[in-house]
Length: 158
Image (cartoon, rainbow, N blue to C red; front, side, top):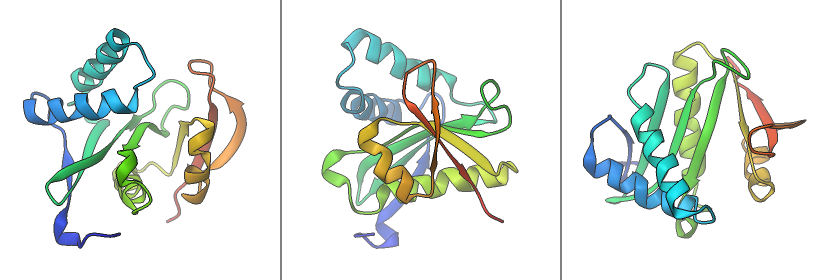
């Protein structure tokens, strides 16, 4: 990673944190820029409203006083019960290719390990598949019904 460890901070969002909520809305508007504004903002607010349970997390990555991305993940209870599900992982475009996505993914994997979860999955667009492959994810040849995107899986090792 480009910056020293002392300049890097992972911050867990806690429901009601207005400052981080505002940061999430800003990042989310960029992350979901192709969605209609009303639909996008409703979705982003719902993500914030769902935080606080024991099996759902929203982490921000702060580097040298700037939040460069976030990851949103949970323990799946429907499609693959007991698996970890990465719902979003986003790094600002100007901050990519510096190891920050890997950093957020490592945090995600650590949370899953602490919960005894060894398998996790996600859906992805084709532009991001190379990143996920590089992170050890494997394509399943399945397509998610809810968003039409390919499903990829990863198994954690000991």
